[in-house]
Structure formats: C-alpha cells, structure tokens
Length: 79
Image 1: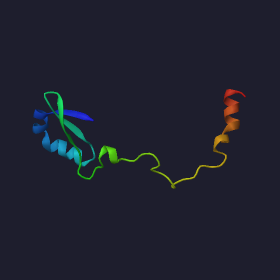
Image 2: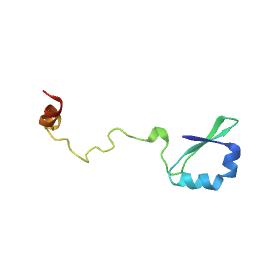
Image 3: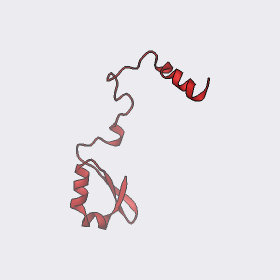
Image 4: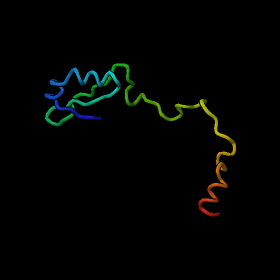
C-alpha cells in the first residue's frame, strides 16, 4: 500500500480521492509515520476479505486430474 506524506495528500486530495473511488487504498503519513489508512467506503476491511474457498461450487475437478497430461509429461521429461 502506498504511503503519502501529509503535505502531498493535502495538495493532491482530489486525485487521491479519485484513485480511492477506483478501489485503491493508501496511507497518509506525518513525518514518515503512518497516521491514517484511506480506502473506499464500500471496500471490505483487510480482515474481512475471504480468499480460501471463494470459488467453491463454481467448478469441478476431474477424477483423473492427477493423471492428466501424463503421456505428454513422460514424453517431455522421460519416464
């Protein structure tokens, strides 16, 4: 996440808000120390984001998945 100095944030506020509305988040720092994290209102908190299992039920893994391409692999790398 990008860190932006307080003075720069004041100067470029409208640009930063536009970037935030597109989903980007950034940190405002004062004297190099992070002070605030800025993100869009509708974006989930970092601890609310679920990644594992997010595609559950959307596809199936074939029964022969671990054997798929076996002959091609054997041909390329020897058996």
